[in-house]
Image (cartoon, rainbow, N blue to C red; front, side, top):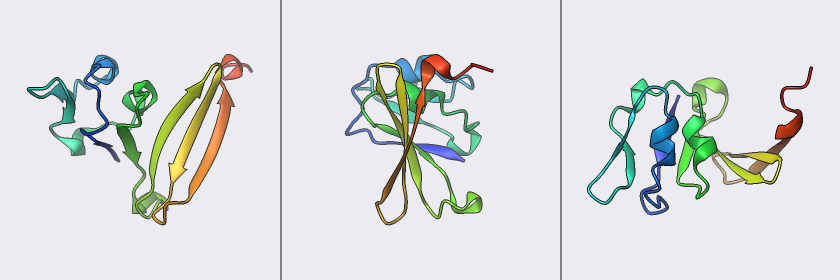
Length: 104
């Protein structure tokens, strides 16, 4: 489990670096984010949720049935869309209402 960062899409806002609990994300000379040791990624998806530019995608991996699928998020008000893109480029979207996420 790890993330992939598209430096072309990265805006150098630094929000992802602030939320990484493992302090695994770094800034290059242009302020853009990179991960030095992808194998150390915890898979928490904090950075994925914080990136509003689709620059960070979570790699699901073949061992979890993903066959190379990636995941990114998109927020619309209280809605969080989890977008899974499979190896053929097809998208599946799971939407949750963040205001009800912790309701029991």
